[in-house]
Image 1: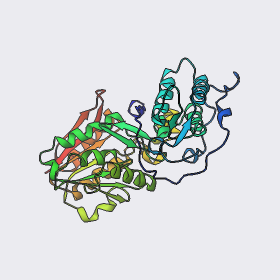
Image 2 (image 1 turned 30 degrees about the vertical axis):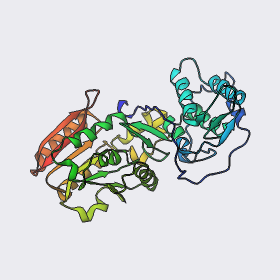
Image 3 (image 1 turned 90 degrees about the vertical axis):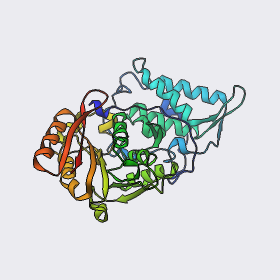
Image 4 (image 1 turned 180 degrees about the horizontal axis):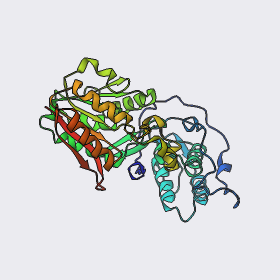
Length: 355
């Protein structure tokens, strides 16, 4: 499905580790030996992991946040490149690109006549590469980040990877008159990408209240808030949708949400990188994909102040058209309700204002 396609352009960075380390797994270079021709293609592994969030690697800290403390001789690094490349068929140029990006994220310094300085031992990189190629682990989970707008957002397994089309909601918020000093809610914040991006645009009186029911998402969102220094602008609250916002009824200038909206029966048809590895909690929108969107519509009137704005991301044309009609006819408290196109000319978003 187009709106769940993955893209990434990782960037090397350094910061303190935020997850507990585990001891490295030794002698994993043998995992990169080419498989016999009779085995499954590297691009079509036989079965998904039973629990992808528990897939082993040497260190759960995102690669781009690990300190550069591992010296690797040039010959060993070159041998790793050869073994890693041998796993990738010529028909998958994107994987060769990902290999270059993996090494770019892992490298802090290198020279032609000296050792490379890496953020992980080669054994760890080999585990990560095998997971990406053979288990279809999203590249964003491998390196621990996604480029989104002008941010490099930390992500981890158990948290939805932010998509390029979702970037548009920040521009919609910026277009609201007086947005900079308003209070906003980002419901189902996930990695916190939207909350951080909006917070960086706010003025002295502005604030974002970011909620999520997932403990994993809360941890990653807090990390991203700290990394971008917007702790004074973002308050993260644990809980489902509007539940953590009881004290904010009638006080919000805006509500933003990219909720789960994939119909349950469509989940098995998602690409393996999505269906096997990204959290079902952040994907499954119920029988028709509208379960959470309808809940959000029901709660809008109680939290938005007069003149308040909302924007929801949806599964596309039919969802957006249905919600525009429903909100416009069922609730007289809203006006200027409309569907907004994404960059692919799909009616991806529903926006409107409270009277």
